[in-house]
Image 1 (tube, rainbow, N blue to C red):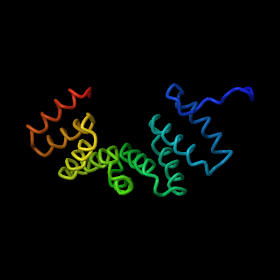
Image 2: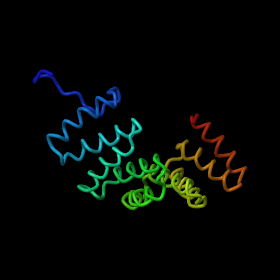
Image 3: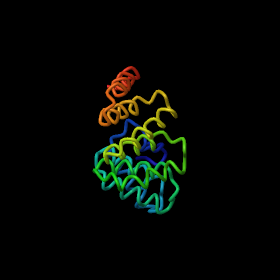
Image 4: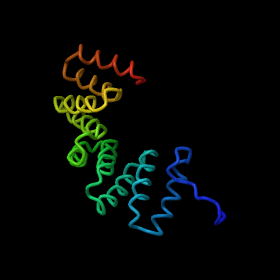
Length: 169
């Protein structure tokens, strides 16, 4: 790349995750304490399904910024994706402590509770996510599943229909 050309922002949605990872790895090699680059690379790894590497990058972010609610949520989500539901909970709980209006953290903690069979807690967290964002179709879909597992077929059907009406596939 010519020095006078603007650098491409590696977070652009049009960038392939592998290209983003390569560029961010270069930035991290130049400055290992570059929290933003580690956070973005961790997200790119998650997008590729490489959750162990995503967790490693979020570990580094959280070593430098332990109260980063986004990194807490994203590491918790990565743990969810590899089936480490109990391990995900402290990060998701901390993300909610840091930001009580963080709908995605409530959603993700609800997913962890669901997978652990803690259905009342799952419904409560998914309900809170919906209270924060009434158009959050994914929370309706997942709450529908929790209601179904708890035996409340009517509530499950209602939430399923709402999720579809809101655009959920």
